[in-house]
Length: 366
Image 1 (cartoon, rainbow, N blue to C red):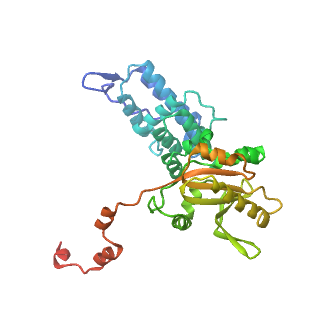
Image 2 (spheres, rainbow, N blue to C red):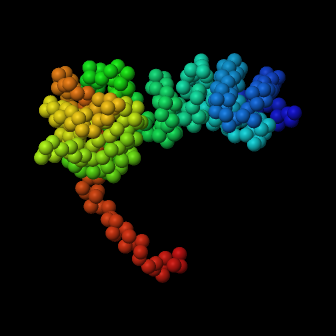
Image 3 (cartoon, helix red, strand yellow):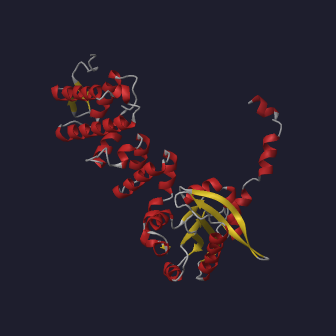
């Protein structure tokens, strides 16, 4: 086996004043790492995620142990990175930066159960995102479990962290709903997990004073982002869905079907603070959907009321005597550009005109 490229003076400069001597301890450690790599057949199976994550964790544990027990400075990782890449030139993952990530991974998870802990089943890029963006261990575990449950990509995971999904969806004591009273236990638990507060519509480019129809129209245009914010399982049915009673016609703001809950979900928007009478209006829509649209094998229709603001105490009281399952949440819009900034920006027409202008002589000679 090719031996590592060891400097002839048998020393590694870690600073102008200190040196890490490449003595028998270090060479034994390096050979032990290479032996583990061969024994685990990482070179052949690195693409298999579980083996890769297991090796990275074990590597991090070994680095922690050596740096704790030996007087080796930070340049130890420079030397280890160099030797590993020399030995395995076709294998990625041994940069100093990634070795530091392995060490941090091992320090954050000193005991890692590869059969049970969700983080061990994630790709390395997901784990890096969690370590970089989430400090709380409970929150990291929650996001890891949701990644496994919903199959989130790394970019989706990042978006969910940025919008603080953990706080909006997991803190049940802040939610206003009567699901436990109006739905069977299994369905009520799933419905509560579905509910967020607040909902973030930052992908919309309308101002905070937009009316209900303007918000509804914008959400429909951005239905992909809207469904992503609502969560897994939502299927869009339509907006302003008509329901007829004799010669009278009523319209539902937005209608969805939830594939896991197996029921229709009526979503109503209120571009104003919550009022108790809003639940009565929504209850009427739920009864109508149950009567006219619900299939015999569907579960009871659920209502989702999104308001600009809500008083939790008022919302909880309004739900107490409701016979229909309803959840009440706030929604947040991103702020529109200030008027003075809007006027300072060029219009689309001005930009197109500028792009279509013929080049001047000076431009051509540049």
